[in-house]
Length: 397
Image (tube, rainbow, N blue to C red):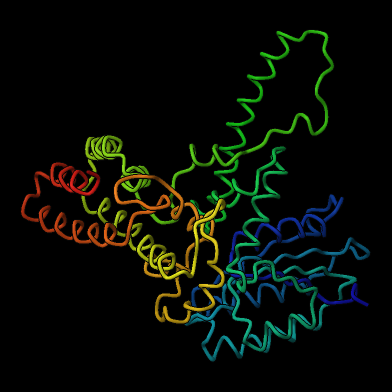
């Protein structure tokens, strides 16, 4: 029977997601028990083989512990933050692999009627024998399979966290939040709390105004009280940290709005900023736009109402060409979030633009201007704001 499996094993590549589900599962396993001596949480984090050995032996001692009075409640043990199953120096060590054989014997001998064991591990090299054995032997959960880049799991986190906060979030808002924050689940959750507080504060203000003008009217109940995080809220309140770029300056520059761009530069340098990160941000965005413009000009993609259409087909045709650039970066358009790519493709209307996108010639000229500006900041280090101001004026006029 499934209930007779000796332990529960939760793994994935994102430690936050794994730990999040682990906390939920541990709470369910503890249930209504009030016996603090019947539960134990152990750390499986190990920096070297000696610490791996210590973690395994601590678990062995814990699961072999019985109540001194007999007839006590079933013990619940959680071995959390296990990291020695990863494809790492410690995880690949022969001594670690030998210890895993011993670990397997300990786990196989557990009586689930006496001890409920939960193990959470991230990341995990599933090519190894031990994780495969756990998948067959334990209650096994893999929560963020990277075949879809983890995007589905992260969108699930956004939806579930919003529901827990008592708000809803539109699909476009979820996609934009993920595009701006990236795969940092901790930051996603914190950003959702901020957005929820903002929309709830606005809703409370609206409700007070409505009540003052509609005294005696029926109160809103149920889903009518649920406030929604819209795409506009994310666009206004959430910084673009996924690319590490200076978002306002890049947005202003590629919108073709010279006055906005110059104002953004003044704010940046007034706060003590430097020219180099601005140039890096502009180059990163420009590289992506060159790739987008090339796909459109070649007929492999089109600008539609919801952004760049045809991107999946283009990815299947060209993604293999990006050898050595599989990680998320501006050199590989297909490593970017599709929603973010669509936003870039349809944003702005300025000089040299067709269909809301700069021409390929304008984008190539931009790259040359960035190089020239970088060289000038070296020769004119005390005039960086003036150098960038001159550059954006040449590009936007």
